[in-house]
Image (cartoon, rainbow, N blue to C red; front, top):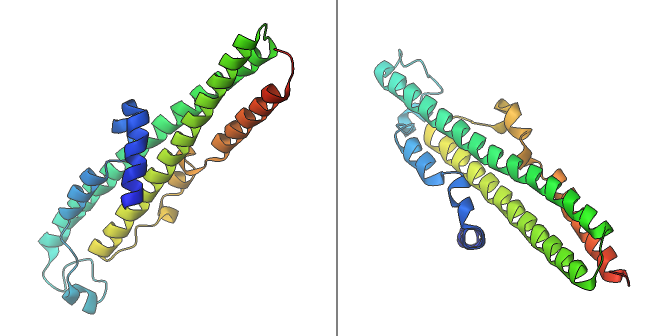
Length: 194
């Protein structure tokens, strides 16, 4: 957890405008605490979710409402994270294309140095986006694990197939863009001409 906090603090320090774009783990935890935990008696009696056999019908209905609230908040947070990640990826694609054009039309060593700096900065921002993705994925896994423990049910990603297809779960494009930056830098550092 300390590593995560340091990494998140570093991303927020370098790019403070990203602060509100992280998954709201604290809010999800608060929503999760509204769900009544499954008691050890319930676990011994099996998986009777109807509530009729044990007279827990009202409690089950309240829990259903709270679980729906948790699920909605979780989906809202995932949409927020995904939209931010997707926008950043699109921005990086555009910026990289612009830098490729600039690198192909260099007139001076000063321009070459500036393009190299810009590529390095873009690459560094991509690394931060990768950390952003890892932190949000880790937060998601942890909150789902807490949900499963508290409710005694399994809330799996397989039950939400679209979640696994979201851009922030798949960093392939980001890695590709990072490799393109590295290739461009290699070419610029090795070239003798501006």
